[in-house]
Image: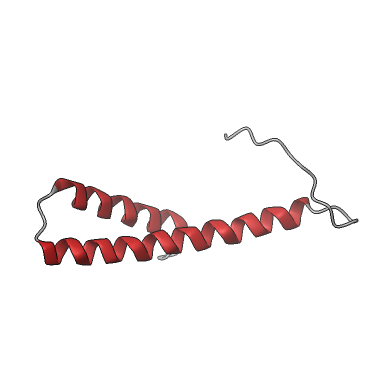
Length: 75
């Protein structure tokens, strides 16, 4: 069960905002509102990713304070 403001929900909302803006079917006022919402969603995604990045760094941190490099396979 995902939280209402989860990364995935924010990313989905951002993608929908981009699609609406790219469609060209919005009035200038509507486009500005959608753009503003998209900026907020992008910031939310950025904050979520930064939080996870810090958690990963903490998990990989060695006893001497150095970070252990781990290959990322992307899957």
